[in-house]
Every structure is written in C-alpha cells, then in structure tokens.
Length: 341
Image (tube, rainbow, N blue to C red; front, side):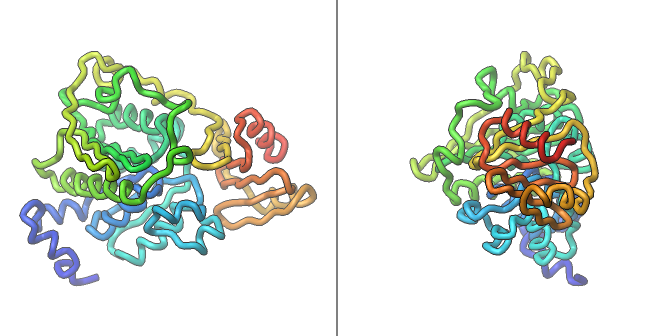
C-alpha cells in the first residue's frame, strides 16, 4: 500500500509514538507464543498497528469451545480443525498486507525455543502452560531479549514486562519459590474464562509492545493484576531478587534441558506426545500404513486417524495429540503402537 500515512496517521499524531516511533514499530520483529485468546488478540492489534514482522507460534488446532473468546477464528475452521497459526496468518494477511506474517506450527520446548525466538526483538507470552512460561523466562534471560508475560483465568488476569538488564527483575523474582510448573492448579477447564479478561490482558500487552518497539520511556515497571468480576485493578511493584535462581544465580531449570515428552493439554481430554527428534513425515505413506486399522484423512499440515476408540492428530514434525486420553503413559503407548517413531 502506497499511502502509509493514511493507515497509521492516528498513531503518528499520538505524542507517545510520532512518525519516528512508527518507523521503529514498522521495523519491529515480534514472536507471539500461542494463538490463544490472548495471543490472537495481540496479533490482531500489532498487525493493525504496523509491526513489521509477526511470528505466530502455535502447535494446536482450533476447537469450537475456543470461539467464545477468540477473535480471529470461525466455526468452519473449528469444524476442519485448522491449525491455529495457519488460520490466524490467513486472517491477518487480509488485515495488513504490509506486515510479514510467519505462521509456525510448533511445540515450544527446550529443543525448539532458540530457533523460535532468536531472530525477533520481542517475545509475547500467551501460553497457558507454566512450564513453557518458565522456559521462556530463562531463554529470554539467556538471549537478553525483552518479553511480556500475560495470563488469564476465570475473570482475572495479569501481565508484566520482563526487560533485559542486570538490574531488571525476571518472572521468577515475582513468583519466588512458590511457583508451580504443573499439578493440581486451577485451569480454564476447571474454572472457566471470560473473554473480557483475555481481551484486557491482550490490550495491555499490545500497548507495552508498542512502547518497547518504539523505545518509549513509558514502559511499565509494575505487574498489573485485575479481576473484571470482582472489580479491582492493581499495580504490584516487582523488585529484583539478588538470590533469584534465574537472573540472580544464573541457573536454568528448563532452558537447555531435555523437554517433556508428554504434556496434558489444558481444557482438553488429550495428551500431546513429542518425539525425541523432529522429523519430516510423509503423510501419504502414513495414511497407507494406518488405512487398514481405521479411518485416515490428511492435509498438508496434519493427519487425522481414528479406529473408533483412539483418535490421533499427527503433525508433520512427528508431534501428535492423542485425544480422549488423560494418562500420559497410555498416550505414549498409543503413539508407539500407531506412529512408532
């Protein structure tokens, strides 16, 4: 589009950005971890704001129950179980053709994190996995990259900018020793989620992203926490902990380690299985192999198999989602029997 000014003029006349700031934003490179209700809304905001490059990272597919809080996806895409990164990219390319939209269908783990974020200026967290979030905290500390934490559950949410620098606190400084990377914690499947809470987190993250990309001195220092049902909105100061295991003692519990080979998926009766090494599968050959055992269909992105009891969604890199299974050992056994990598 030739008339750049007409598209971004409302941002350029805003004193906090101006033409110089908009120029920096147009050169910015951002990775968004998961096209969740938060991530999709952030991607929409940043594409419309003219961020030059957006990497949309997500290894999941669209489901009907997500449409209650999603802004980019349709019923048809949910019926077809379209990969979320692909559907988001298709929509956003129609929103702003000047922005490079890079969909990446990938799990985020210690083996993939470097390749996913090393070429961007800023990372935005929109995951519902605490383990992924703690990995991201350590990876960004090691790579000296800014990232924006954000999460929502039920009617509440919170977000925090995590900036590089010896005097800057990281997420573990806030969490202390009371963090939990999994276990019997509330999830969106057990307590639900309001779309308004997700939208607020996304709006706050989007604003901070524009500040960071435009080198603003207004980047927020405090963590924001709120509850739209209980009617509160607070700023919580976060101090640097000199004894923090990550940014204080330079120790990593997740980054550089072998990632989990299985993971129960939030809000789904499913388990994700990740092979030890990524491969490039030939779906045509796998369809032939599995056809005698059940029904098979595939696209260029995924292969679906069902024998009436077991349902598997297989991705090109060998990762699979075993549906209607909650036990990780059972999921591994199913994977070994049917996929065999």
